[in-house]
Length: 120
Image (tube, rainbow, N blue to C red; front, side, top):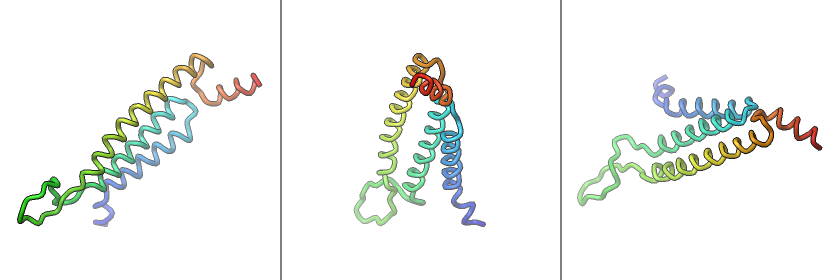
């Protein structure tokens, strides 16, 4: 039981990942799909940050004569880049949704597909 509770951050990641995935596949509204993708993204960010944490670790600054555990800074750097890419992707997706709304008058996936089929 202690192992189960000791890994709570991974349980949070799994919950967020499944929530985001469910939102993407179950909703027809395009904005809700983008929100689901963002929830999924946040779960991946938390996973990488959790893996980079070393208990008792310090900043990776070498000091002569000391033998200590260091935390890995690479996951944090990668996540900062991923956050920037995620914000840009979200902005682009929302801009496309606005254009879809202007063109079709709806942001519901089923209605757009019906309009496309009736035009063909």
